[in-house]
Every structure is written in structure tokens, then in C-alpha cells.
Length: 189
Image (cartoon, rainbow, N blue to C red):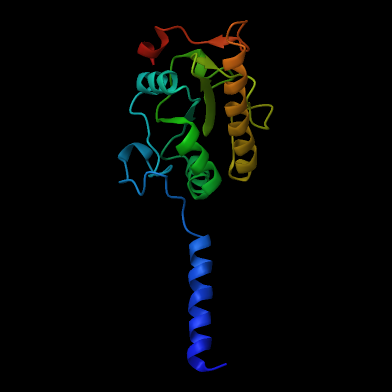
């Protein structure tokens, strides 16, 4: 094989490798980074307020994922980096979820059923029901996630999507959770 042919093969291999390790880009193309993401996935469309997030969840019939974090918390920052670098999580969030960053604690007990800690993730379905059946792996922080919990979070996201489909079918029957948010709750948060 000649040097030119070997160089061409090398270039093609490098191009193929670089294209398989690229960052997830939404179907609509690269988005301009939003300050609302606060580094949690600039390509995602983040809701500005909790009220907007609830509205978008209902109108788009998508589950809402609410992230509770603090900018000056080392655990939140480490979790943010792992979360942002996980292309599977970013893809599912972009295509199937409404997302909202909660940078301050809330007085709504439905959003902190087992206490106020960070990082914490709560799933809310389009009927404004906090899903108390989608939890992390810690008994003392039911909605808490750590850096090593990306697979747990991914499975919980898939569960939230599946429950949405099941609840759409059974909407004519009784609700599946005990934490339904009243309409006035959105204004209190």
C-alpha cells in the first residue's frame, strides 16, 4: 500500500471515529445556548418558570422533570457535569420531556416530599401529578441522585415515559399517584 493510500485510510478512520463520539445535536439542529440551562444541557429547551413548565407539560403531553440544585454545591456541580455529558439522557430529555431547573427551594411540600436536599429530581406527569413511584436508589433521599446514578436516572426517565402512555390509556379510571398538584400550587412556587 502506498503512503498516500495509507494516509487516506487513516484520515477516513479518524473521521469515522470522531463522528461516532460527537455530542448529541437535537433534530432541529444546534441550538443557541440558553442561560436557563445553567450548564445542564444547552441544547435543551428549558422552561423559565415552574408555571410555564407545568403548562408545557400539559399542552405537549410530556412528563416534566424538575431538577433541584445549588450552584455552590460540589455534589450538584459534579452531578451536572455527568448529566450534561450523558448523550442518552440529553437525547431523551430533548425529545420526550419538559425540563426545569429549580435554583431555590420551594414551599410546595409536593416537590419536597422527603425533605429539601440537592441534587434532587422530581418527575411530574401532564396531569400535574408528582410521581412518587419514580425514585432514586437512596432510602434517606428518595429523589436524590449522585454522579454514579446516571443509569438509574435513565431508567427512571424511561419509566416516566412508559407511565405517561399507560396513564393516557387509563385516564378514564382513577389516578396512579397520591401527590396531585392543585391548580393554585403553580402560583405559590
